[in-house]
Length: 619
Image 1 (spheres, one colour):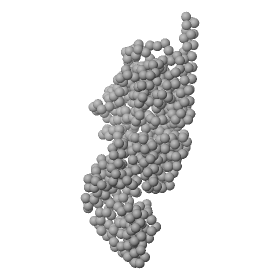
Image 2: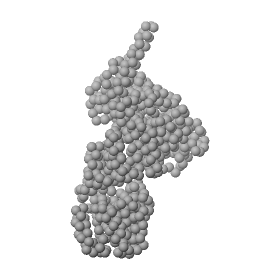
Image 3: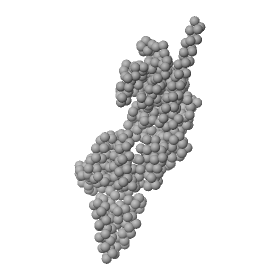
């Protein structure tokens, strides 16, 4: 029934109750119709009148409970469903509706139990599977959720809500293109399904198609202005686009509708962090945690901010929540052997240290391996395959394996980025001796003979992994970094292995940049090239971590709010003593950064020239 038809029904029923105030059916139906029309005071009135006429009718209690659920009076709703089920113990619809109310209270296991009862009583009702699928989705039990939504669709292929739910699971699984197909099917069946437009917005946001996401959220809100998750989605997109005022306005709308919306407080914290309003960011993260103690993302984001602030002990602890964050959950290793965080003696035991984040994180964390070996343990190191040639002879490693290779016996394990926590790292105790990675002499000699030049030799890189969550901030377009390559007296070498669209043509059009990228097979080649360079200049990628680990001079180009390892408001870092940091002054603006780099390069060229001149005079 459409909204207009509910309006017609309301008019007829009001005429009946005016003539017959004690007509049970008319009062009961008016409660239902008023609920659908969101006329909550009127609905309450007619349900109560109905109860005064007949207090033994199970559907009345079920429908009254449905109204109370819609009115967000969840505990009262459950009381009404309980009465309905006492009067009619095999009332499948009452079990399903009570499950909905329990789900709103985040009692997912209880809700699923009720959905199970409803399905057992009426296995052919497609809506019950749809409801249970939603609960499984909120519990992040994706395979069960997909199965339920598919079953609902099998029972009723025209059920738009089930196609929408199926899309929601696919969004959480980051299968965004498939999700869009599910939403398209839902909308072909019901073009005014606001949750399908909301889902489209989420899928487009996941694909970083921000204009499409904003349009989809706006459409959802035109259909249902009280859809708090659409306001949340808008806030998240505005946050990604660095449109802080609009992000705050959207989050405020979401919180006005649902003050305990944990994700909106999390979003506010992220915007405050990007604005470097750190006290407000921490307060917002704390609010998110109080409202949603299971919100791992809030703990993790707080942890990263604490690390940036140099508050490392609490920062490392909070970052352990990463394993319950969607981004990291697929990489969690469920070994039967215990996790080691320096909470047991590992002398004469075998410990597996395994890479679990990006290449740069692996290179940074390797510095801790000799410290673990010094505790008397045999270290098995598992790393990304591309790093294996570089780390073959790493100090303290008894066995090196590539990710995906068979694991040997081990007694305990530790993810590499948990080692700073295990070894109680503070600002003062960061292991900063470099180099801690070395390159085989023959590899260095091979590249030294190829790179011989009289000028200052500078390697450049500009972009990291495009799938990294903050890649939009940290990577620089090649066309924007080209001014750095215009300083006279410098020979430039491209270390950028993975090129973005248009990079190849641009590099070929600039002969003053020597391309060695096509000859780089692995990180050992990159490291060997660096050993023959005077300087490396790069955005915040694995390249700078490699240069820092090799003890090579490296200039790091950083966004306004940089990664935690670079701390705040300093041009050096205790992680890499040979690094010099160039930071954005204004968010998104690389102009001043690149101007400063060019000026520093010119000084380096002048200094080198004066040294050569002095040497010639001394001869």
